Amino acid sequence: PSAADSSLTPTLIAPEAGSTVTYTLQARDAYGNPVPNETFALSLGTGSVTATLSAASVTTDAQGEASFTATSDVAGTLDVVATEGSGSSAVTVDASPVSVQAGPVSSSVSTVSRTSAGSVTAGPGNVTLQVTVSDAYSNPITNLTASDFSVAGSTSQGSITSGPTFEIADVTGSGGVYTITLTDEVAGSQTLP
Image (tube, rainbow, N blue to C red; front, side, top):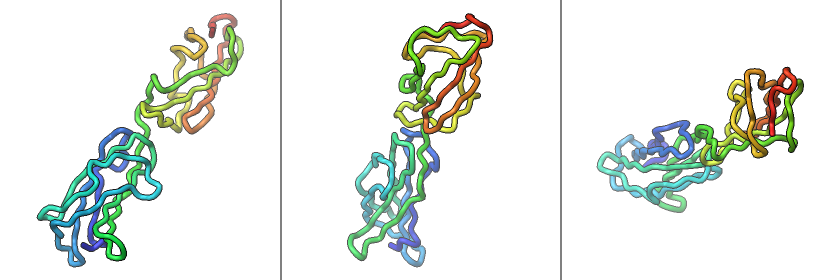
């Protein structure tokens, strides 16, 4: 087979972590003809996120094609390589890189904590929370803004009693870790244990 004329194509370009991506290998010679019955070893390219491949190798069918899958729980670039032969005569076919994305926010993995312990009665004034936002595989959820957050639930120090006067004043941070400033302009109206 010819590396320049062969291809390794993923079905998904930006799957969520935990998704299965199917790859189709098309082996062709320098004249574009399918190359059947060739065995290719499968591996992850340098710098790729960790992934589980469905097979260690595949053999092309009568049309010069073979398929397999890869699954990664880690957000980042997934790079899969198929190699036929070895040494100087090896033919290596690289797949188009796949950008594995963090999945939906997981409430069981994400955390919320106050920057200071003890009872605080909000209003008028501010209370600061630190929020770590992750998917089910602990991949950080990035690029969130104030509109992606709401005030309800609990922190590691206790529950937040929220009402119509509690508002998110500011959100800063990146890489899945955010500092959220809550404000309440009505004195004594809300309590954060």
